[in-house]
Image (cartoon, rainbow, N blue to C red):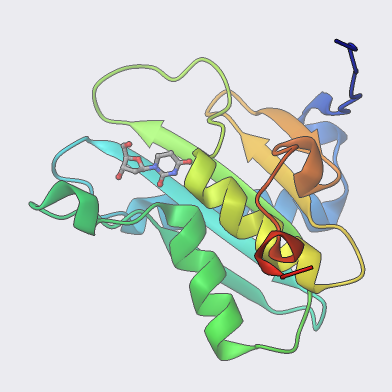
Length: 162
Ligand code: THU
């Protein structure tokens, strides 16, 4: 048996240390979390995507009384972006969350299914997708590529016959 190591990089910062473009995207995610439909969890998530054409696409989590029928903010935004602009790459995705029931003390990390969807779109384009996770006290965690958030993602070559 042989041990292997992988190196993942991420950065922690405060919002005020970021570029104007990144601050803008976070502001957007914070604003759009107010559009969440989250009557069951009271957990509001906003996600904003900056596309290569400069357009910003926003999403929020949409819950359903049949729980699995709901969808996370990240996938709402990603699927909308991909449907509207199938040939435009994604530069950055920002995620912000707020709970009606408790104080969130750290950034919210996207669920595995959302990371898998991010990994698919990252794979489809040349440049990596930057992921910015934002907490209500303005801490941020940044991964410069989705691969750092989801090593060992299921990728399309696995579906090919050899
Ligand atoms: N949720 C998101 O929208 N994004 C995440 O990254 C984590 C969880 C939503 C799903 C559900 O509506 C609520 O937050 C509680 O899990």
